[in-house]
Length: 439
Image 1: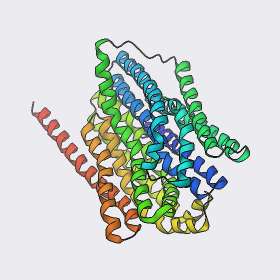
Image 2: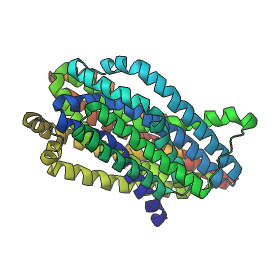
Image 3: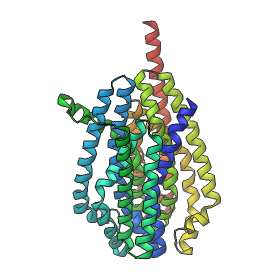
Image 4: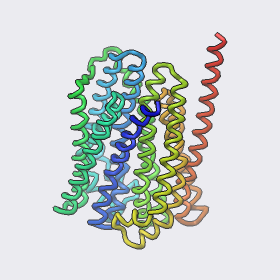
């Protein structure tokens, strides 16, 4: 079991980490080429880009969970139907979001707190990101399906291909030509196109053909994919809800300098959060297969293995970023004053990694085992808690320190909620086992 666990989890970790480096790469190149305001613009615009990826991940993971459950239950035809429906939903979502973002992103950027030069840079970036929305959705949405078909290494290769393409084109478009914010956005879109091409190649080589005729089952399948997909979608996007809320609070309490500080903090945290999500999503195919077979003890053992590994990764990341925080921050080309401010406040955020390591695995366990309500409570409860703390703490402290403290405190509260939900779930499983034994 341990060998199989790491066979799935390690490629998933790397794939998720690379998906986060798209925004960090854009921030690195435009920060060094344009300056602090470009860093802040990418940070404010990134939640919209992340929403495209979250929609793709949600639909793809919803279909992938059902694919594994059907496969574990001995229904390969049903699995292929879920594969086909997932592809259709991904295409519809990608095309629809292209037009939605072209029409609404300028107003949304203002709502997120963008103004002045930062708004102009963010709007330019989002125009070109919107044009590539279809490939953003497909590039992220097909990866979970590939992973659940036994192609964890190919899923990682798809993300590596996209990442390398993005880095090369960022260098070319932002530094060499230079095309500024537009160049960074186009580089991201082409990088996601490359990921999609690798995914499509996997299906062609493996001759994995989706079934596109659903009959009366179609509506039920859409409902199942979307109900399950709401959890991984929220899990993928929740750091960006944090980003939106904290950006607005930082802008109102500390101004543009505080927004730029949080941009750098979010860049550094992004990879760690995605590594932790990679662990949780990497164990999902195994949990879903185990659940589909009715092996509840195996499901629990996989979850506990993920808890241990996730905590170790979080502790290592926390320690490494603390020790090397100043050189890591300086990589983005920010001014010396901003680098000093970020190095001073970053430790406040680092402790939250330990809390997130437990919550992420708990959430993935719930949606992988078809327990959607607890997953929803964890994913969507944390932003509500954060919002309440952002209302109270800055007013209490009288400074931007209250904004910074709200983030780890909301993560701690979410961890306690996860502990309670896991305990309730364990008690329910014990009762079912005792009732079955009496029968």
